[in-house]
Amino acid sequence: MKTLAFAAALTLGLSSAPASLSIVQAASITGTWRLRTHDNWSRRDGERWVSIQMRREDGRSFGMSLPLTDLESAGLRGDAWTASGVRFSLRRDAGTIEFKGDFDAGHGTGDFTFAPNAEFVREMQGRGRTLSADDVLRVAIHDVSRSFIQSIEAQGYRDLDIDELVKMRIHGVDAEYIAAFRKAGYDKLSTEDLIKTRIHGATPAFVQEMRAAGFDKLSIEDLVKMRIHGVSPSFIREVRDLGLKAADVEDLVKMRIHGVSAEFVKEMRDLGYKDLDIDDLVRMRIHGVTPQFIRELKELGFGDVREERLVQFRIHGVTPSFIREVRAAGFKDMTAEDLVEMSIHGRRWLEKR
Image 1 (cartoon, rainbow, N blue to C red):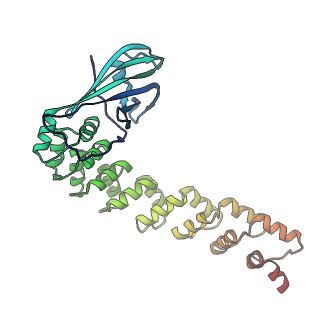
Image 2: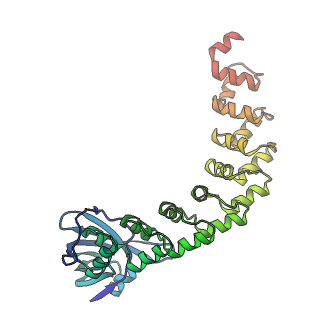
Image 3: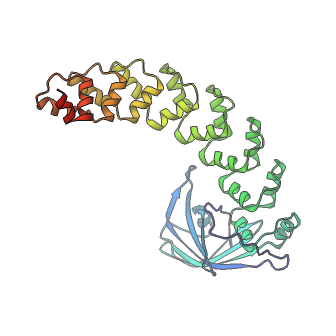
């Protein structure tokens, strides 16, 4: 029998029922499985993975992922593999899932049986953790082993429930990761913060990058926000090279959210807008004051419109086409203020004329 060592990547659709497993009645769980070898994808390291869907006899479904190399070790040869009587297993500290079935042109189906490890259940109960049958299956699939729990407890996290441990395992929050954050000056982070930083890539390495860029003692919230919106060390350098005074993280995040790039700033300066601060630039981007908009206005004779008036133009619909329509109606010498008033008040403005 081939033994597979694969990691689950999807959250199980299982309930955490309070019914506990007794030491001598560590119930097995059975059901069916299916997968399609051609429905695979590459992870960051280039390794190919495939999803396997599983359905318990009680009708509840869940899924997980495994490397294609593990199926290859069981005999898989190409996406259209056909074979009968295939057997493989997932062995974890909490128990073992045995798979058997057939493949037809890359479509695999069959039955599975999960057998809990009574020793694991006994030790968890000895530690005060009462696990349901669902819990044991869940920790087996996500490889929440005794050694993993012990390593997390050694970092000071002693009272975590199964849900927290599973989430940490899914997202790669291990003892080494916690220790790296502590070394970076973030001691005793909540599990929620640790998981959040992992999800968004606000890692201890990113902390060091931000420190090198001059941002020390950032909150977890700021670190995550910067990662979400792409405030990278290179972006910070670009902002500084432009001579813009980014006072805090909020300025940098605003720029990224609204698309104030180095190219945008340079184009605006080339068009004569050399003294815009970050708030000015953000406001212009929010309201659609683009370099192209300014160039079209210049062609119509409005080459010295202030930033505030440009924003007014966009808010009130004073576009190049509007200006041409006004001129075609016989209004040849309208000022920028006139155009805004006319756009806002329409006929009432004409009556005043």
